[in-house]
Amino acid sequence: MKVSEFRLAVDEEFGEPQGRVLVGELVIDELGGRTAEQALADGVPTGDVWLALCRANDVPRERWHGRGRPVHH
Image (cartoon, rainbow, N blue to C red):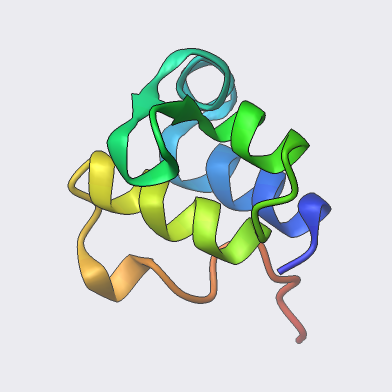
């Protein structure tokens, strides 16, 4: 997952304003007590950060994959 896909996935799942707050302020135990933003800056793979963010926010498993990817018509 690219960072751009991560950002799009966050916006799609949580809405842009709420997603930005979650990424920048929510401390996630699974990420070593870091925010998603900190984990990304520390080099944690974006896919791992996305899944940790989903689990921390009780996103249904069926929405964990495919978010942030362009829709091809």
